[in-house]
View 1 (cartoon, each protein chain N blue to C red):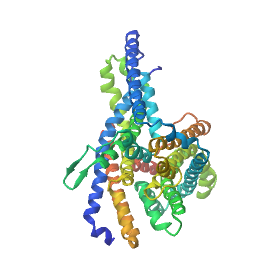
View 2: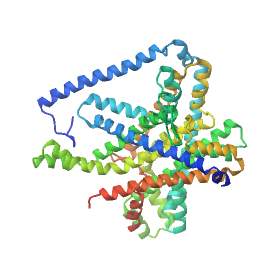
View 3: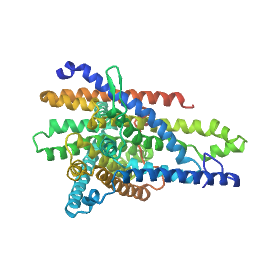
View 4: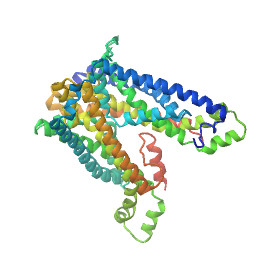
Length: 227
Length: 287
């Protein structure tokens, strides 16, 4: 544990990157997932098929391959993020960070899309039929009956997708972001005799972060539940 | 389209409008696809030399062996995870509070820790006496065993809890003991509804084998790392290797869906959420 305590600022900075990666790609993934699910459940069958193909392909690709593509292959065909160069406090947002955000967002959007879609599918058809039968217009059916139920039903699966995202930020360690997993690897290499302590310390950091997200999701789920 | 919860069956006007949308959508998608292909063409990525390795027999053989390595790592990990999952899943349902708590801690720990960290740690701390390649192989198997085992433990628990309560009650009523109820009545029924979820977990394991690249490339990631060094064809290599993963996973998914139809019927596949388990635990404990 001494090694961890000695370089505590580095450890916190590393977990800071983990949280930042999670927050930035989390927001983008929620937006991307919403767009995808709109295509997926919308009435235009071409968009429906296009979104379904994208989701199937990306969900079955290892996240590492997505990262690999954007880190090494995409620059060869002129897609790079070298233009991103922002420094806030001790955190640097360079091409490594933005590449990670792009890969994580493209990957997680598909899981968010499926989570939201399962929420829509959880609403029984009779709900919409009853709403139409009492004369609600389309906007009323959506606003008052279908979407509130779909939204509530999708909270737990979306939270699962976001927790997976939180753990997946560790893949950025392979591609140049010094976040928690990468910091652990550096410290493991420098302090061979303290491997167990270092591993436990970093693992507990992740357990803590996952519990925070999980508790937040659980609270929202309870608060929004009807009856 | 059949009746849908989001919108009513469209009338003639709406059908016409949707047709316009479809045409626009097709055009936009074609333009996007065209731009992607043009970009690849302009950068010379369709040159034959870059793709030649993938039809060269000995390289194809190397890729095939790497693919088998990846597949065997995932298969071994899932087999190990099954054992881990049964032990801890049943332990989580134990009547003895300390056993239940201990297994809860183990399962939650391995579910929350990123696989890539488990791999780094086991590579440097557990398998450091082996050769690099063997060590990397077995750290993948071990890491994925404990991670997927923790997930499967939850699947097992959910599967056993999903059985009608009368099954256990009837077994107790005819005088069976706790172990008999679990082994003869509950597990055989639960396993049937869990088989599809277990095969789906194989997809997760297969994708996660690639994470070992953080310390050393084994299986398909070895090809991903080494082939571009000799042929300078990183774009085709990434596409082909990613394609191999996707194809394998699609086959596995098809098998899982078939197993679902055969063993369970049209019901939803068993899924474990990362949140809200406390509620499930309470409802399970109340009966």
